[in-house]
Amino acid sequence: MTSTTHHETQIVSDPDVPLVRVTREFDAPREKVFRAHVDPDLFARWNGPAGMETRIDRHDCRTGGSYRYVMTQDGEEYAFNGVFHEVRQDELIVQTFAFEGMPDAVALERLVLEDLGNGRCRLTCTSLVDSFEGRDGFVASGMEVGVNEGYAKLDALLAGS
Image 1: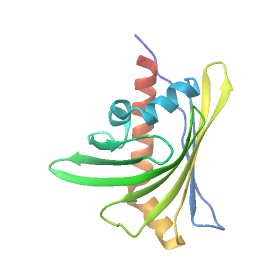
Image 2: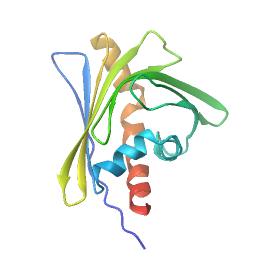
Image 3: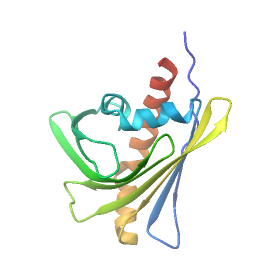
């Protein structure tokens, strides 16, 4: 039986700019964590809160590519989309992120993967929105639950691969 370590996820709202920073360590090499973000089949398996399913409509994870996915639960659907502005193998993804229910609230996200050695890595994702109110709404929307439960699913996926 494989044992999975769950690391603490830090979610910090910057006091000076409308930005949220998420930091999380994984007991997996950054190549595997990167692949779990760029491979649509893997992404759908771990993304989002427990109990929700992710359907990928489009996931062209390359510089200039775009994505759209729909999360479903109990007949409800929540769609998200964006554009990949820069993708660097195993280390960086810069993208926009929009919830289609609030199309004017677009975040600019920067995901960086840092190799920690010994088959471990650190993920740091910053999400910049256009106002403090928007940022606070982003955080209040249940983001913390979705991030923590999604990363727990990612831990299990990485331990099994």
